[in-house]
Length: 66
Image (cartoon, rainbow, N blue to C red; front, top):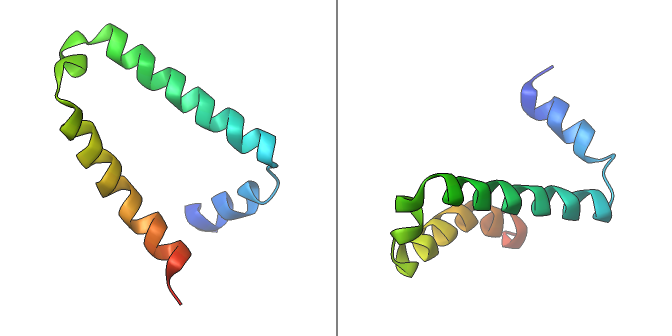
């Protein structure tokens, strides 16, 4: 079984609350990284926007393709 197949079968068992908690834990982890490495917080807002856009391209494409 491939890792992606294993992950897909596990994700189907998650509810909306579980996914929301995963998002919250990732946000907390990112905030922890920023507090541990201050130069990361000194970047301009446009770098964070660029990371957001680049990370969102594939999921948006997967959702909105025909």
